[in-house]
Length: 217
Image (tube, rainbow, N blue to C red; front, side):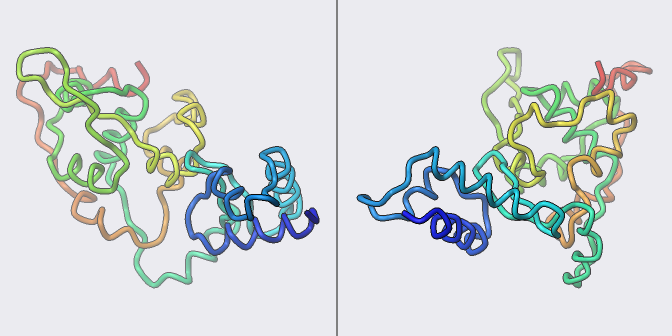
């Protein structure tokens, strides 16, 4: 098979899919008797990545596969294509999601113990509905609280291949920078509007200063 044809098919598939495409899926695009092996597909992906160097798009590998996306340094002007107001994420939502990402598996009660405030149910419901977080079991303690962990969709949405690609806690400096590091500032996320500005009450059973632990412990 012609290398140029292979690269063109892969590029067209990634543009048409509108989602990450796994290497195995890319191989399945071709007839059985002309199907390229994984090495050939990886080589074509490498050539595509090189072709995009210095351009406005980039080839990225995330948890579910490969995708073509807007380069970060041109994302702001491109975002003007969307008329919706960009979603604003509350510090409470960011802190909750950060604790789940860095401390998983974790229960809602453990999040409240660390933050020192009761987690608003809207926040947990929202991250579950978005598919960023899922229940993976129950803690073996009285009440058997749910254990929360991030999902493949979480990695895909924030442009990560694995959890190892999360910015280190030392890099975060402040939890609000999590939104920058993980590209929270994206156009039009109306599903998060309800959780964006919710008010949280202090957790009754948390001792003063318990929130000092934070995601950095």
